[in-house]
Image 1 (cartoon, helix red, strand yellow):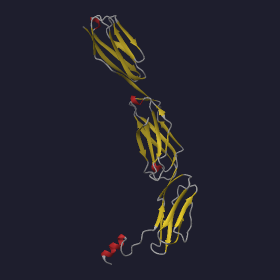
Image 2 (cartoon, helix red, strand yellow; image 1 turned 90 degrees about the vertical axis):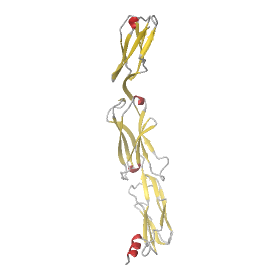
Image 3 (cartoon, one colour; image 1 turned 30 degrees about the vertical axis):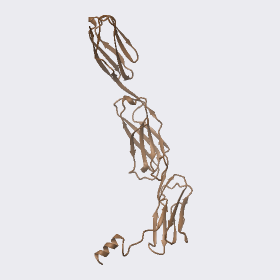
Amino acid sequence: ISSQLLRLLGSGTGLGAVPDCPLEISPQRAVVRYGDPVTVNCTTTQTPRGMGWEAPVGATGMKTDVQSVTWSVSSLTDWTAEPKCYGNFLTEPKQCRKNLNISLYKYPDSVSLSSDSPVVQMVEGRQYHLQCEVQNIAPVQYLTVNWYRGQTLIHSQDFFTNTTRTPVNVSATLLFTPDRAHSGQQLTCEAELNLGPEGPKPPPANQSDPLKITVLYKPIIRPWQTSVDGEKGSTIVFTCAAEGNPPPWYRWEYYDAGNVKELTTSTASNITITGATAFNIGEYSCTATNKLGMDTKILKVRVI
């Protein structure tokens, strides 16, 4: 046999070529919720001796004098189902079959958020391991776990390498480092099944109960003026205010000339100098403190 003929045979063209399988499945992919009905047609453009569906449920047996057969199940619950349409023909290809691409899916029984440590009060800058537990979902290959802070998507995790078809439990982990801007916000995780163009729209998604967080952080004094000038005999007022959680307490250090008064509230501490004199000239130090740390600022007073 010539090398040219061998090449033709090897490529499936020319002498010895076998026609493509004349069976057509519609829809080509079926996406079915667990327990729902499903119907798929198989047709042929070539007169068959017989054709049918092979399947663990809904098998039709060999049908003669037909050019289409229907696979129909009133309630699909078989996770291993791989229906095949087959046909026997008078001419080539004589026999062939096509598999139905089918995805049987199930929503999770529950989605919950937990942590390896208490998270109702988080400390700014500390890393927390959050767990999203998704119970009894299938197929996990199409699962995406989304993490939200408020309405903001902060992380997503896919499981496309896991081809298990039956329901499984899935655990997804998020390493979360809070800052003070996150205090009062809510964290949630979401299990989303992205089943492709044949699947439900929008993709079904189940969310955990929200976790409202409070972030604890050390004080920061702001805004702050580094110096203040006053005329002799005048009244000079300046304020020390800090952002911190829990709220900080305040301590002033200065030379007490007898005409200086402090007034502290839950949000700030004020200094009032009445009838300023040369004895009031100098540095005034304010320190704001809570259990997470402190911040100190110094202001210089000049009397002119």
